[in-house]
Length: 352
Image (tube, rainbow, N blue to C red; front, side, top):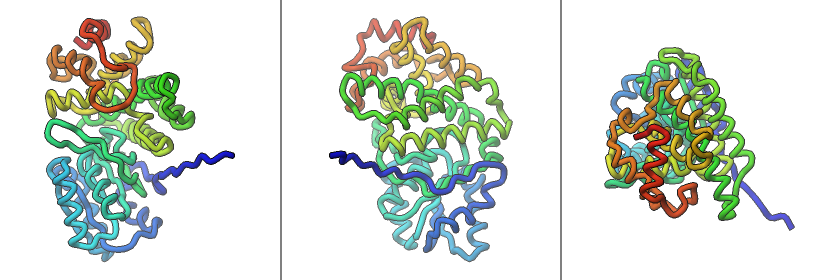
């Protein structure tokens, strides 16, 4: 008797394009949300988009509330939960890059209310996914949460964001390439459940970005369009899988370990991009497809070396050797790398 079941939670409305922030209220009307809205943002995104959204909602008589967060921490999540409770928020907006969206996402999960994602930078696939990332001491936690009911990605705003944030978003997508390889390996060796649909969507998204890297140009709104659509696809793949597996493998373990060793040294997307270069080398060998990953990163202007990351060689080696301990997730790293093997991987790929 077949008893398998799955609950896939996806955004109902996804608005992408020039000036769509002006349609935010209309997109939410279509969701039939009720109650007072709470806008969660951070200082720069507040100036870029948060105040505009506040004025838009206020002009409609929605009586919006607004809270500004400084960092992505459990304390900040609790502050937003408290603010949402105080104003009896019916739903939340996350307006910003990573931290404001992750915090709003987790607070809405706790409150049991809807959440709308309004990214101001195409820096990672958290704008759509059902997971939030917060720091606690020298550890970064990935926490399950509700995916957004709607995503409003204004390419005019995204194209005006610092270019390094966009290249980080590109690198995050490119790293799906090795995340899916690790997932398939875990399926073959450890019988980890694998979704053909989610894996194919994630891999296709990464391959399309690798193949079209030369079309991603600074200041072009069309480039923002391509990148944010790829980030949406990556988030949808995770929702289909019911886990972060389609977009998180050994390259993410490497990045998380760097976060412990040298907090805030580099952007998440840039770290996983370099991690993907080395883990693809481990999957396919010296003459494998790791060069395609490197070339795509270099073409968009993302770092391909430890020096460009701003991280010293020995820290990269330490991260490679120990990052398998970050979480119980089987990857190409298995139970850890020998130091000599780690140096070879980092050296052959040109990371060190």
